[in-house]
Length: 558
Image 1 (cartoon, rainbow, N blue to C red):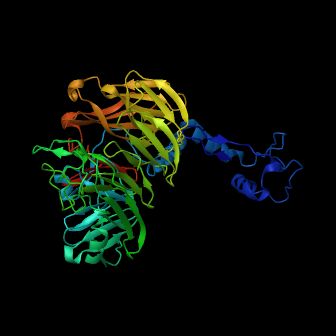
Image 2 (tube, helix red, strand yellow; image 1 turned 180 degrees about the vertical axis):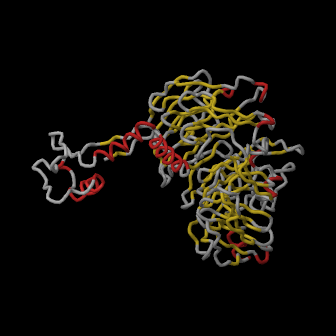
């Protein structure tokens, strides 16, 4: 029988003894393949028929001719083996973060879709193009519709009319973070008659529910939340009339001092379909640097409407949020906290303006601070603390689905890289020539990182030993500020999006084993159209397909 190989390994064929074989299993098909036993030829004691050879050990040679033929094809040419392994690898790439079926050859455009993509307000405010991965489609607002495109072909899978002033989420800004969700919550309609619906991956829409003005007054303005919720927030508690501190802002927006008093913030999540409350959390106000209290928040959640004029621009009631598929990240005057989709508050120990909380793909979370020294707390999926590490805990931007989950401590340990288990247990500690800045990929036993000056290095995932290093040999292609903004992999090669901070972008594909350049595209040769757009290149991977997302359209690259 044949045993499946490990990634990159070989197939192994086992010879099975008569006693271990199932007589009703492989024997009958093999005998049939070799030819039926002629009438009158009874089996011998060793299991063979007259004229059929035996090796004397009891191993069956019945059917050896067709098996040998198959082995000759597979082992002689390698084509069968390679085809099976390539197909398995390609399928695996469809299910992993940053996985693309094939980046072994220069990319070209495979399809294009033209039209408005994402909220125009978000683009105007510099937040990038907001989209979501919904199953195996790319979903986004386009005018007054919610549109879904097939990642493989670019065809419209479905389109849902939304109405006036739509707001769908959770979404993520391309180039900053990819949001993958099981459903999108959409708010639409005039303020006096605003409704909410939930849209699934197949475009099926729930019955609309009216968002009552009474709930708005009681719980705060609504926003699309994670896990099929509507999230509301409002300042609660006593309004301070004195002791506000020495915070002050100039007419130019320069704020100094501390705001020492303000109201708490109560956040409520309700089921988008039924309106039933799922959880409610109150985040207490804490003294905050005045620059966190400037009245620069602009949308419905992001301004209190009751700004207090303390030498011009301070607003102790201002707050905002970034909502992803797993987190409600709160910020504002006196507020710095994150609430998970299950209603668990995290990061309440972080001083406002000095850190944040992020989700990990293994289901856990990290909270980091950067006020004096960078430290990262590690949480499990329930929000319980499991460890603490030096520096910022980075997980790989692209993986091939092999090897253990790995976190790298970067940004604080100087010219060193430390690898950790997800619970913070150190795995190895190694020196690099310059400080580590990002964890680009984990592929085939190699950790691909970027260090200072845009140098890309491949480290052995087990020992931390450097296997190879690559740096662009022609800095004139990008300028002095070379860095890698995004990375993808097909399990054999790692694709890097190279930028210089001034709008120039290119692509480089490296062999993950040797670090050698497989192909590269620079300048006018680059297939990228959205080079230099805010928030990065606008590339993302869906179901093994690479897409470039721009405010005026989407393209498939392959």
